[in-house]
Length: 496
Image 1 (cartoon, rainbow, N blue to C red):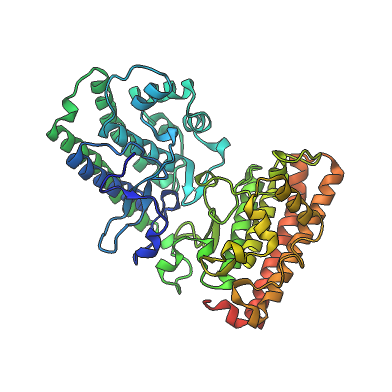
Image 2: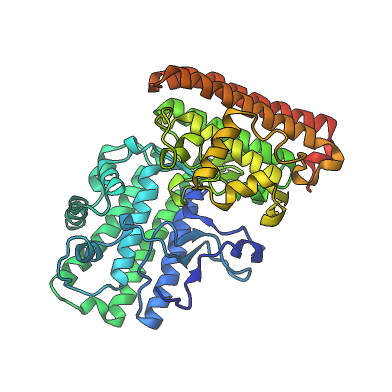
């Protein structure tokens, strides 16, 4: 879509220009009220833009609706951006009927299609998330959303979406469930909100399918936006009331810290050495809990999916993993097992399990140690150690896969990238602690991989049985390094 005034380009530099809390992905909401307020303000901006230009946005999804504001002068809680990423999961029935079912369109795309996409986004966040950044395992998705998420471009999914839009919406799900984003206390709020929005959209969809263009009249457009925003405002106020009622049982953790300091930030934006390590520690703890409960893995651990901070105000976590589907996999951080599947034919190509994700955490720690000179500032490619330069130049090449395999099954990064001068701490001597940590993590991975090779096959039961000891060893090494930094090198725990 060509750039339209009013729709902000999806650009990470926005965060550096804004003194208010940095824009964040919609999935990183800290409360149901926050993401509803973000949706409200994005819809409000959409309405203003459409009324002035008559041009719809055309791509409402989780990549284009963000929490926060793009201007220091704005009090908006949500912004609408542009993105080249298309997510059919959130596209309107009208659009999918044309692109997937190949039916002759009965009406052109307009504002109603975009507001239908907002409706699906609200339903997605309410029904597949339990907290900000914490998503249900796919096996636990509501059946309708599970089918759409798995096969959004299939004829069956589009037909089911049409039946749902022409029928009762998501009402049946909320009648049958006691779970919802934020807990069961919010079920009635989202049931009423989605039912009200569905009623609006259903009537307009029927009108459009009959060729009725009354909905494009100026006052009809204004009235539709007013009703849509009114239902959102009612839901927002009710979520605030619920939050106040439960505030006594849910105090914001670490009250010594200002609230803004707990807004999730990319792992690259660490403020202290210990903050970075503790964020990794807590992300691994969360990963372990998820794996033991569901048997599923994250599958995309890299610099863009690990966040510093808490996923919600009621959480004590100092770091967590974001949605794996938000970014494309980065081969720099993928495990040997995964990378070599498509490049090298090896007999140890097991199905990915928790060990692949722990290996990715190992590469993240190593990459930050060797490739960064300070928070958020990477070394130029020419200044990277030869080993990392070789891996990053063409990570999908056979040479890179063989090199990564050699690193894992031989000596790791020991002595191959020069001295450990992570985070400009050479003068402090903390490089020895970080170097020791990386070497220890490598030994753990190497030993488990060698044991895995001897099994010739690795069942889920075997993975679950052995995982606790491996997680414990990983977490212990990180905690030990944090303790050593805090004790021997207090300078390392201050801002660099």
